[in-house]
Length: 236
Image (cartoon, rainbow, N blue to C red; front, side, top):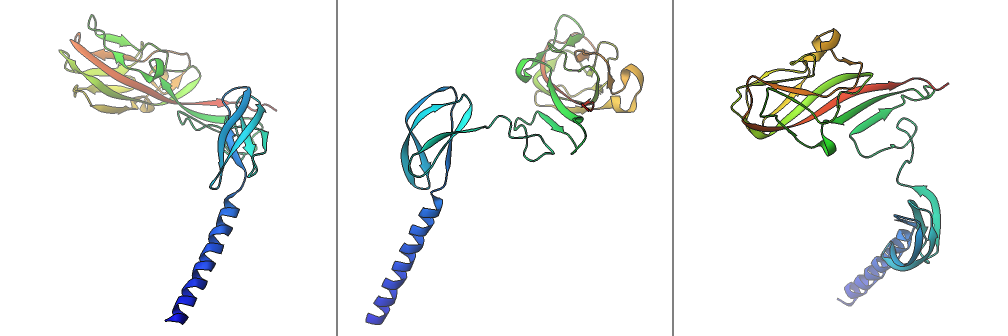
C-alpha cells in the first residue's frame, strides 16, 4: 500500500507540473477592441487565466494588444477590413454582400448582393386602395443581373385571390400567379431567367419591385428581398 501511495503522489506532482505548463502557454497576447479614440484606464483584459489592468490612449476602432504583464500598445489594426476575399482573409462578415476578386484580376470583381426593398429589410404593406403596390426602395439596381426575388407573407392577404411580383413594366416579371396568401407563405421567384428584353434578368435602371393583386386587397404585408449580381472593371 505504501508503494501505491508514493506512486499516486508522483502522478499528482506530474499533473500539477503539466497544469502549470499549460497555464504558462496560455499567457499569450490578448487583444481588446476600442470603440472610440479615448483613454483606457482600469479596463480588464485576460491572458490565459490572468486578469490585469491596461492604461493608455488608442486610435478609434483599433485593437489594443496587451501582454501577460499588462503592457498595452495600439496594434494599428482593426476588425473593419482585414483584407479582400481572394487575397487572404474575408473583408466582411455581414453576409448580405459577397465579393470576390477571383485572384490577380487587376482590380476587377464579381459581386453578389442582397438588396432591401424597404428600409432595414422591412415589410411592404399592400395598398388597399388599388391593385398595385411598389416597394419603398428601388431594390432593382442599375446595371445588374437579377438572380431572384424572394418573399415571405407576414400578414395574410385578404379579399384578393392571387398576386404576381414584377416591376412597373412587367407585372409577372419575377413571379407568376401566387394563390397561397396566408401569413408564413414563402416564395422564390426567378421567372425572369427564361425571358428576354425588359422582362429578362438584365436591369438597366434602378427601379422598385411591384406586387400586383387580382383585385384590391383588404389587408396584407410581405417581405421582399432581391438577389443580384454586379461587376467591377479592371483598374489597370
